[in-house]
Image 1 (cartoon, helix red, strand yellow):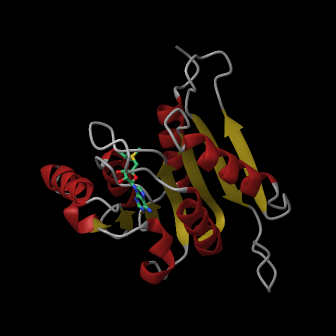
Image 2 (cartoon, rainbow, N blue to C red; image 1 turned 135 degrees about the vertical axis):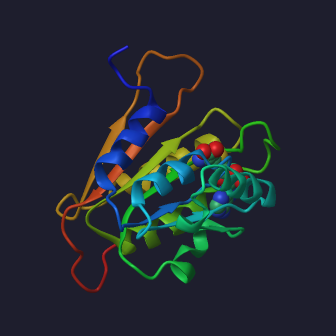
Length: 195
Ligand code: SAM
């Protein structure tokens, strides 16, 4: 298959944006796949900040890092991503959100529109020019469509002079297929901040 699946595409975008020594964020650590992927990209001089509100997800992510001997490259926080500005104080090269629920776990513990939006706004401020925020949007579960709509309304109004916004989506897949939104900062905001 030549067209990349959405998760592959999301990781490809991260790979293209992250270099050794970078500071990056996994906003939804879950089972730790993206945290590990980012830890492999940032090298020993870089730093991954990973957030999840579920202790189970934090433990799984830490174990995955330990299995690969990369735990020293990541700070895995049992905190909501809406607190990102309290923990990350350096310019960020890339961030990833996988919205929705933790696969194989409680399907009612989901990412929520207001906290997702708060994290997104704070990460846009922390993002360096040339940096990328990638969101994989799942919207088939209860609550998913409200979150999707709020994120889409927000990203559509971002001024293209500062942020480029891309949607990557398969149009003929069934059952609410996930899609990717990618935000690239192309120019620093003037003060006062506009988002
Ligand atoms: N990227 C993950 C992986 O590789 O397995 C999958 C993430 S899963 C789709 C979504 C995760 O977001 C869940 O683990 C859930 O606990 C977490 N979550 C929900 N609300 C959150 C919040 N406010 N801050 C951080 N994580 C949150």
